[in-house]
Length: 144
Image (cartoon, rainbow, N blue to C red; front, side):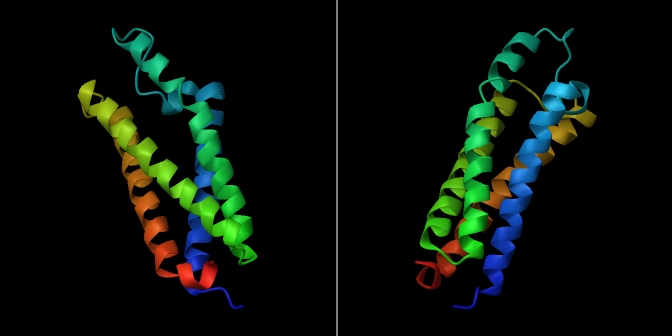
């Protein structure tokens, strides 16, 4: 069966998700000043660190589900559809969770470089999850 063109877009999003999540955590542990939105001198640093340190496992799940989904969709297997749906739902949940924390803890005030990076991460995550879901759903009959 020929792979629908839009599914190639989902495959690209899945590859991007895997690479972006991996790069984020690589930077978090090896070059934290690049991605961390709070400094150790900030009064809410401990709360921020506690919150962020809860994310490696769920992010790893989304990254792994994306990677499995990429291979499954490439081979036009139904488990690729399921795995990518799991990744999309996980990404949307993580984006909403991140947005709520950011709003509750004024992460966008002041609106500096760190706030711009944080907002970009949240917006990308929240856009890609629904985009993947819609494209997958549109072609569900061809993929299942």
